[in-house]
Amino acid sequence: MTPIYASDETVKKTECCVACGHAATATWHGEAGSISVCGPCAVEVLPNLIADAVDLPRTWSSVKSLVTYTEGKLWRAITCRLYRGSDHATN
Picture (cartoon, helix red, strand yellow):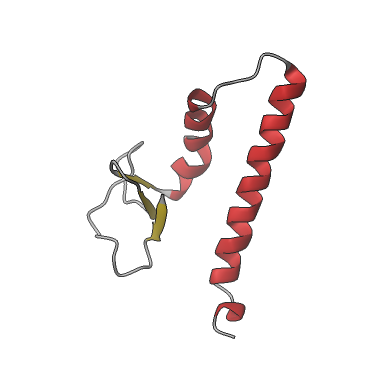
């Protein structure tokens, strides 16, 4: 999916969060549709969606490995977002 942020001109101001209906701050466009979320729901609701969507392993050690992997993906996404917003993006 391709992220589009509320500060980008391509995001329509009428897009609403799929979880609460408030104004979305980010939209991800996929092959079959888009997902728009606000900041609070990104933190509070999306983790529940992830937990429901993944095929959970049968052992706690495997679950821990999956959580560690997912946390790593989150930190990488945050780092990329911070980098895009910094002066480094234009240097």
